[in-house]
Image (cartoon, rainbow, N blue to C red; front, side, top):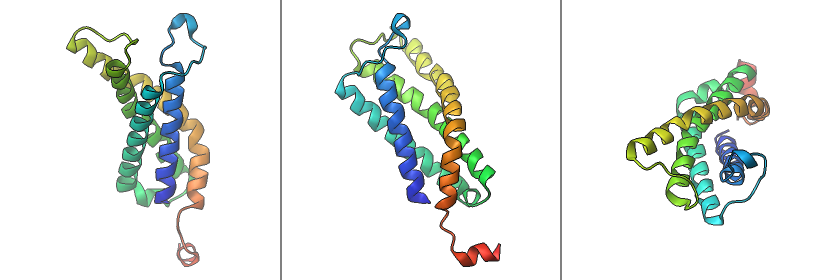
Length: 158
């Protein structure tokens, strides 16, 4: 179960980083045009996403490992919550990387505006994470039920 959560968190983070790399340089007049960003930025996005995914899955295992062995809806709720929390944490990381390492990105001029932009990015990250969690929570919770790690004797004892 632990290995599945770590791999799933890293893959979800990787997918988010690649998607962010494709859409991060667009402005409102080219909203639905996907262009790959520079490879160096993509590498930084991937590193941030995998780090956040591993951190969130580690916290989830630390706080709710017993609950993950319960029924489907408990696992589903925890998956939605963890993907949403990952979005809340990942969005400021990606915003910070964009501001500091992308020469073409608009960066706020003052420190207070920079910090507020980074902090306010957590709100859309949480909304997108909640939406993504609702969709991805179903298959993740079902797969997590298969990888619970219970033996036959533990199932009979319940």
